[in-house]
Length: 403
Image (cartoon, rainbow, N blue to C red; front, side):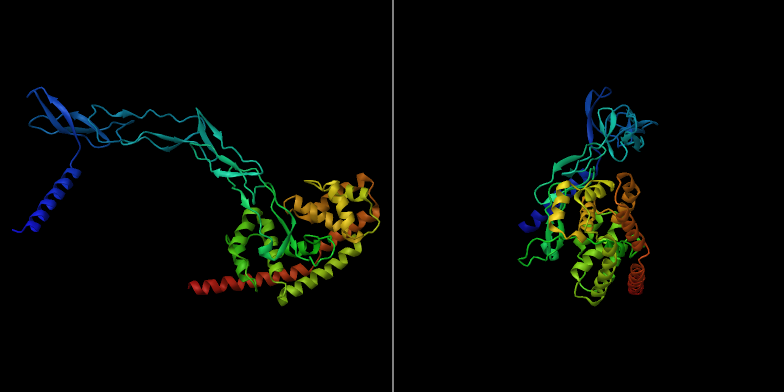
C-alpha cells in the first residue's frame, strides 16, 4: 500500500473518531464505592438530573426535572435548579419556566430595568438624537447632533436627521438650519438684486396642496402618489425624509410642493401655478392692507397659537416686504416656526382672539373673507379629482402587472 493512501486512511480514522466523540455525551468523574475505582460516567442532558451514578456494570440513570425546576446544560447534578426568577413590578414574563430554562422577565416597550424597577427610557431633547435605542435591559443613549444634522423633537427613538440639501433641489437656503432646526429652502431668485421678501408658501398653494389628496389611501399611498405624478420623480430619499419629518396630514402637501418646485416647466404644473396666481390676486384684495402698523402686525402674530414670530422678524418683514405682502410673509414665518402647521387653521384660531386686542374691524373682516374664500376655493377640488384619477390608474396598472 502506498504512503499517500496510508496517510489518507489514518486521517479518515481520526476524523471518524472525532465525530464519534463529538456525538457522545460529555463525561464526569465519579468514585464507585463498590469497586473503589474512579469511573467516567455520562452526564445527563438538559432538562434532567442524575438519579443514579454509573457503576462498573451500569450506565448513569437520568430523570426529568420536576415542575418549576430546570437544567440548562448537560450536568452531573443530583437535582435540578429551582426556577427562582420573580418578575418585578411592571415586568411581564417573556419566557415561562421550563425544564431547560429559568423564567425570563422583561420590562414593557419603552422601559428598561434599573435596580428593581422598570424605568422609562430617556427621551433625547431637541438638538440631540438617539445614538443607541433603549432596550428592556438598557437605557437610551443620546448624542448631540453633529454639524449638518438636527433634531426638532423630544424622543426616545428618533435619530438626528440630515439638513435638507437646498441646492440639490435647485433652491437656496432661506433660513440656515442648526442642531434643532432644518434648513428652510426657498426658490432661488438671486439675480444680483437687493434681498427680496421671499414668502415660503402662499395661502393658496397651501389650500390647494394640503387638501389635494385624502391622507389615507393605502399603507404606501405617499409612494404611489409620487410614482403617479408626471415629470421629474421625487427621489426615494426625499420621500422618506417627508415621512420622517411630517405627520400624515402634512405629507401630501410637502410632496406636492416639492413636485411643483422640481417640475416648473411641465404643462400641468404651469397650469397649477397660473391657478394659484389667480387665487393669490383674490387673497391680496382682502389681505393686502398698506396701513397696518408694527403694533397691528405684532398683535396679529401674538393672537396665533404655538410659537410666536419674534419682533425682530416683524421689523425685518416691514423693511423687506411691500405693505401688501407683510401679512402673508409673517403667516409664512409662523408656519415655519410651528413645524409646518396649517396656516389657515392658525388664522382661524387667531381671529377668535383679535377682538379682545381692539384690532381694526376692517382688517378682521378682511381676514375672515380670506378664510371663507380659501374654504370654498373650488380649484383644489378639481385637482383633487385629477390626482385621485392618476393614483387610481397607477394602482390599476400595478395590479395588472402583478397578475
